[in-house]
Image (cartoon, rainbow, N blue to C red):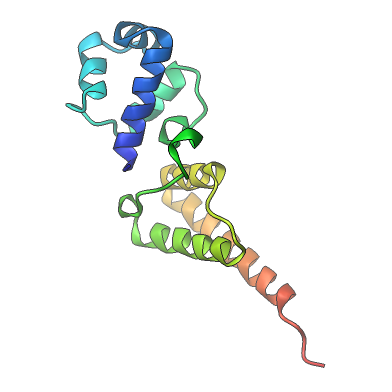
Length: 145
């Protein structure tokens, strides 16, 4: 399931929990026709619209991007990421697999938050991550005696 499908599926679930599309439209302060188009896949949910839905529904940032635990492991469509972002995610995933783990929903939310950051913030985040990785590697490398 790609990110737009995950978002739509999550909104459909929320609409059901609230009692239907009209209730979702009311609670999210969106028009009924717009909500219907989003839920039926006529309109896709971009980044800004998704965050607006989350804010108006009182949800945490990135909540609509999460794959429900009951639907299987969390996944991320890497084609949605830039080259640098994709490389970073692949490196993290490889390190986790090496340690017998998969990306958690929290880790995927961190990727989503990173994607929304400014270029300057991304540069700082990458610098810190690279420094942390270098430090971890240095601390785990046996010293020559």
